[in-house]
Length: 349
View (cartoon, rainbow, N blue to C red):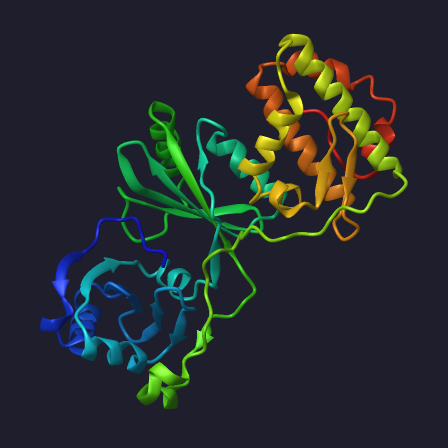
């Protein structure tokens, strides 16, 4: 489950000693809106509330799909069977429905390090993909530092450990986070909002919950599938242009460092950024780059998206080797410039 990063309003409580319904009513009167988070060894519960109503109740057992309802019944059943550690977060009136109506999401399996990509660059690349989801940020010496939220590539706000209310759109908070990462180092974890609905709770099933629950999982979004073997075909104009781009890329890197392995470096970037460019994930075998820089692709993937990802990752390798000026000059000589332009692909960075 995803939790606010702000300091909890209350923590260290045990559900065994609480009448949860009356406790929520008390919180509605005291703080107005917020969420109640309950954690046991094998299950987590969330109740989002405003000063008048229950916004949503979420229940999730380990390895199973989250289940939601606007009623408390499915939350109260497990609370009667076992003890949970209880934490309360205050969420202000402008953020309670954002948190309470958050869509289903899936987390990427791999994390990214600020040593490999800085946060503004990562956000720029996600904006190009019209990313909807969140980035969880851990900073050296401070885990669970922040969560940044995005809708169709635009940053909508963040939850920060030093903040209040659950969702700040202020640039000053974002800039504070950037400063912290620059002084130390950061680790980023991505979560993607999906079109999959959260499983609604059917109230009549509650008495026989163990037998009637539908199985599912929100884990393993980027599982290493078997993929499809690329099908070799006659090269398209874009494929030929991409081969020329890769040849210049390799020549640029090797000219500076005689023992460099440009295509190995490039494929490592494919692994690091498989969440952003999944069609380049080497484990899926949808796209292959040969030792001579020629590209073959499976029929079902988009040539343009492959080209976009290769250009993006190639520039990251160039940045690692500090070859910006040399590479910019070299790619101006590419014969098939118009092919990239027709596809709306920018070669320069």
